[in-house]
Image (cartoon, rainbow, N blue to C red; front, side, top):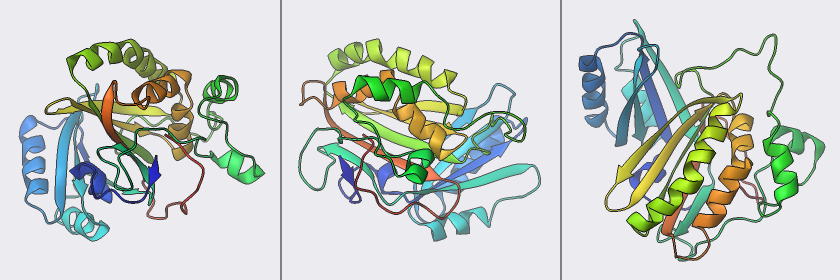
Length: 264
């Protein structure tokens, strides 16, 4: 359910800024050193690493405030190292044991509006309605052509999705796989998809980090039928999971005002 209170959510959800460091052709020593530097910086919450197919390596670090992130970036070299800070939107989603407003597992009624819907003043489709959501998920958020470069690196992405679900146990993971792999395949086919990773935290929490070229590209992924089915499956009572959270980040410091219509 939609919220601006992440006080009961995991540490990643309580961070306001995600910093991306990337270096082409970097050795593991650079990656380890960057992670140590991030962990020693003020406001550090969590970090992880990635490697792209072209050999570039990167570090993704979560910081409590924008000032913490800026202070850390001020210490980083500018020769050969690429940087990007993505700022969390004021509102996101929490469920179950991680929901400060009440221990509830449920999805919101409507999707978050994409730019075209905001411009036209139209109401986003219902999460539970397969027709409109399927059609919206089948179209790219914006045209791809001349003047619209393809984004291939998290260091160039304008939008980030990060979230996690606490599952009941191995049985839930086994059932999850039936929905997870089709969803990932659909996500990879989207024009705005850039990169994603998965992390585990004991005992049964699985988290996802996914970068997209734009915020609209990210929101279109939320409407893909496979993602919609997975979210509804997870939030149907406590049979499969007991908690969840989602936060959206943007590269620009200016974030949209809070909305009443939903996403998860």
